[in-house]
Amino acid sequence: MTGGAFLGYLILMVAVSAFRMLRSLRAAPWPLATGSASLGLGLALKGAGAACWVQGDAGLAVALGCWGAGWLVVALFALADAAARCREYRRIRAILLRYGYSNRILEPLASSRCQRDAALLAARETGHGGRARAYFASLGYRWYHILPDRVVRNPFIFLRPGFLRASFLPGKKGRG
Image (cartoon, rainbow, N blue to C red; front, top):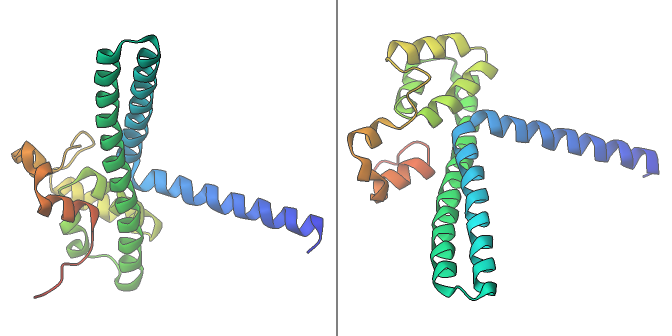
């Protein structure tokens, strides 16, 4: 491969990667924003804790370090949720391409803003964006409905394994 061909290939790969990253951002904007902000805050708190440790203030250093570790855990969960939403976007897009539009495809995704965002992007890319928006609007969902319906009903549901499984392992439930 010549130098010019390699450079062209490299530019193409960078463009494809940028396009995929933009698509991921559009498929899961809330989890990515939450994860990025939590990661920044967690690292800043850990850095402040390290600075306090060097200055000899061990109590404050431990407190800041623990607080920073908590935010890093939040970042981990938010970024895992973003990855799940991107995977779900690809799954819904494939279903819409294969079978066409049906409200039954979107119905299980309606109760969560993150899932609605992924489904709307998949519907937009397959030519069904208007129908999907109208379906979610007919269910009463607006732009300000951010928290999942189950979390609004019970804020402690984050601690249940079933909620975590449904959040991070999207797809059809197995029979059995």
